[in-house]
Image 1 (tube, rainbow, N blue to C red):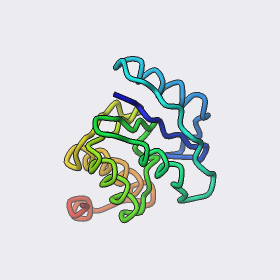
Image 2: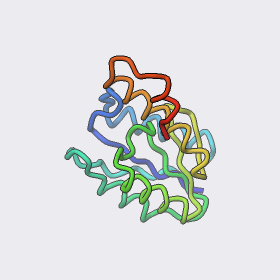
Image 3: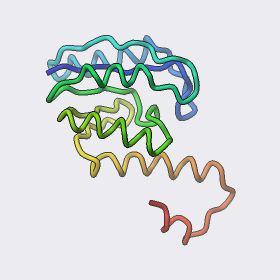
Image 4: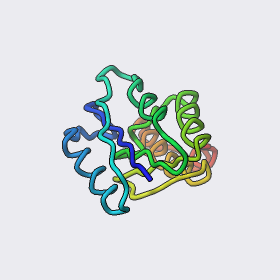
Length: 138
């Protein structure tokens, strides 16, 4: 089994985590599960650019793991996000998110993690959401 890392120098979830720190965490995860770690290419700094993520995904094989420091590093755009997740799952690979300490292999496992970040972003943008609004979020 191989662990392929994905790192970025962009801000994510109000963090700017140095790439060497991200790599150290990803490498330690691979070591903890006795997997081979593949050093990731650095993502471009441009907003909404995921070219290197697609490069890493193209390298995945069955049972490989795409390790990312946080789920919040994935695209917010639903179409792009669905495309990325489908590509990984269609290869029978999985994600591991270091910050969330969560391995996901199916949409049903990923949805609650994504929901928590989306909810936090909405709450950050709003002063006081209504209970009805919160119940209607999907």
